[in-house]
Length: 165
Ligand SMILES: [Zn+2]
Ligand SMILES: [Zn+2]
Image 1 (cartoon, helix red, strand yellow):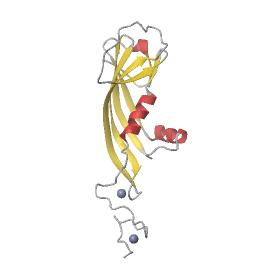
Image 2 (tube, helix red, strand yellow):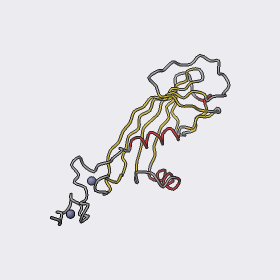
Image 3 (cartoon, rainbow, N blue to C red):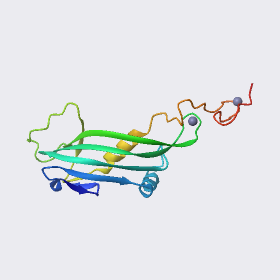
Image 4 (cartoon, helix red, strand yellow):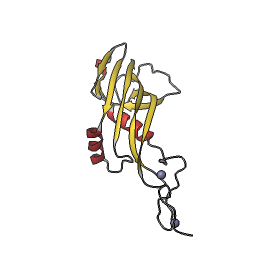
């Protein structure tokens, strides 16, 4: 099995037995991403993992697993906390509308998420970013029983007793 590190993969470089793409994203990557997108809901992060690409005619099957660590703000007490995250996903990349080869038989995959690509090179970065964003919980909690903040005095109730009556 060939292994690849770049997240831009020419489709013709995917051999019949498939291609493994290594994912290793550290702090330099995430600070660049934050500069592009200040609305990101996590601060520090470290994500590693891999994708496996398989060609089925013009469709590309992507099986991925990512794991690592995200630093998030608790939705109750607003304190920063770090938590382990992981995700595994399968998705199908089909040639976008208008791409050549539309007569090919398509991989029937009712259970797969389908995305589209165009051109002859797959850019895996948007797909990986989407999965990382999906790993951030809707309401991150530093701990299950986080006490939050007193709406009246602003005390962080995990750390201090509330002074209100
Ligand atoms: Zn909290
Ligand atoms: Zn209070």
